Length: 307
Image (cartoon, rainbow, N blue to C red; front, side, top):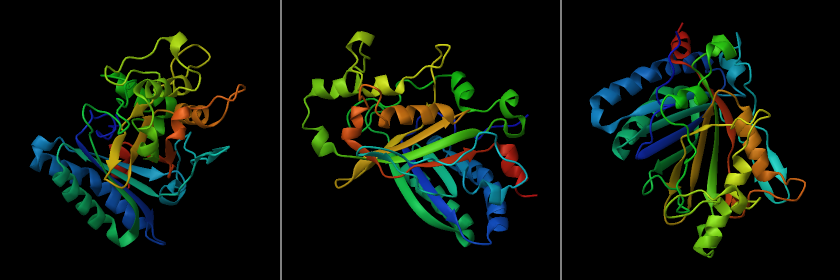
């Protein structure tokens, strides 16, 4: 039975380190060997710093997959499609590899990220790195709790992981989408608290969701809480974390799911205007600067890369 990468469904951490790589020409053999060794590297440092609750995730870019594993492809793996509507855009940026390191210690994340870069160094260029952190009680830098609708308990695995029935060859894997958002907090903070709450359709301090009749059609919750034809909620598992300093602030958005469709529908609902011209007004105060699609395979698959 395939085993998932434990970082996919792990509980929230205090610190994160996201590494995005592009593979150099003719380095696929080296990369396959290196990727197969990353789970053991994570285990080593998780044991060494047991109090840090270290977890890691390795994912392969949709555009790179066929180069590293031409034998087969996850059934629904596809490239991140750029979306534009008026002045709103979800850009697509190509990355070949994604490595997520999370723990309750920033120094441990730094050590592990350094080891990851050393292991991959002869075959990649580091295209982007983002250090993130937990803010207060799991809030975004806008001051609102992030990921309130996340699945809990065993349901996290049902939402995030592919089952044998869905795609037996890639069971226990997950479709991953990332976007790095840059917030305009100066503009956001010109709003009164009630105006901010209306943008989200949720109270700021108590984190209570508005009743249906009080949700504006442009609110973030209204645009992202979607249902299928049978009335079932389209869920994703968010592992997002804030990042930033005194000059730059934002959110590293990370979504895991057993299908890419849920995320894609949510993103289109946010950006594209409906028949009444409604879109997610949160996009007035934040802008995605990156966007990419990956597949996070099972531990069993990563082990196969060494053969």
